[in-house]
Amino acid sequence: MKTYEMAENRQSLPSNREAWVLLVEDDIINQEILKLLLDELGVEVSVADNGLQALEMLNAQRFDLVFMDVQMPVMDGISATVEIRENPLLQDLPIIAMTSDTKIEDLESILAAGMNDYLIKPVEDAELERIFLQWLVTENDSQETNENNQLTENDLRKSILSQVSGIDVEQALKYLGNKPDFLLNLLLQFKKENVQTAAQLKSLLMVKNWAELKFKVHGLKGVCACFRADELHKMAAELEQALIAANTAEAEKLTLSFVVALEKMLVELEKLTPTRTLLQQTSATSKINPEQVKLQIAELIHYLKTGELNAQQSASQLQCLLAGYTQYDELIKQLNADIQEINYPEAIEVAMQLLSLFSKDFPQ
Image 1 (cartoon, one colour):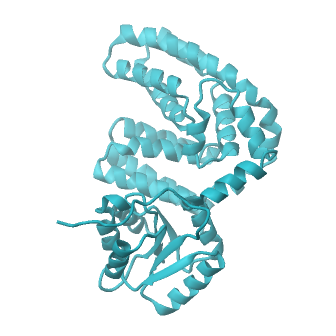
Image 2 (tube, rainbow, N blue to C red; image 1 turned 180 degrees about the vertical axis):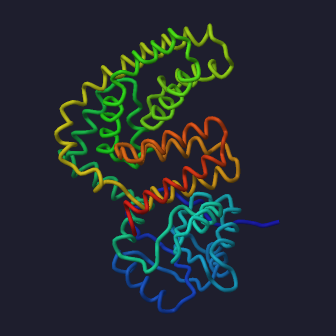
Image 3 (cartoon, helix red, strand yellow; image 1 turned 180 degrees about the horizontal axis):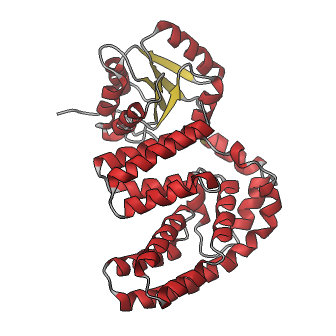
């Protein structure tokens, strides 16, 4: 039986100490380069030469983040991560893979082992900064943000978002990486794409086209989950279940209720109009994180290959990340349809096409 003696890893660091980082890398030159980059970021660094040594150090000392080379002697990074995740006190410890290969099979292995993110070798300082911003948040950082950025554009956007009823803004921002500009863009895109949706749902109900109605409701359910329109999402889910069960009487009643709620939501989204000009001045491509999207696609493919129910949630997250990038709309639509029909082999093919197209648009 294994015993674990480490203190539980916290989500944020006390403002009175630096972050402790464990660098797991077997190559001496790479160790020196990465230590230099990490020193410049002001963190304390300990080095392990292989996965087995990393396990010993993690059981003896608390760390806030781990950079894990994938290929190492004695114990590789994948095996070490699997062992680390068996420790219940290390479930939330961020582990960042370091690899020179971005083949989909490698990304799947990284995700399956329990790693949180990855860096491509040779590691650049800008990418290290991205990792720290994403995975390490200090209490001091949070206080400074709250105290010093009261009149920023983000605060303006948050203020406008808070006026919209029917959306859990706090949870939506948490889900979307605390990016109010992205959430606003997503909501404006939703409003633009659904101007005629209520009328279309009524028409489908009149002609009793249950299959197309189910398809449209399923797509709306996924998008509503992205921006945490919880009540609308719940209604869409209930309607979808009634349609799946072929309970037409219940489906008719739920469709009419859903249409009313959707129309009300679209009226609420009119409150976001003052931000339209500001958002249009911001280039969408400057906001996207290509590595995050590729990792999300890899995660989705992993879930599809293993037949896990998380595939639908993963697809919804991918749809959020690519919101506004219309060149991917058809593939996303097909992907959702295949997952809905539990046609995972076809969904995998579509996801691979999406990854290939996205990689061409956003090369490393």
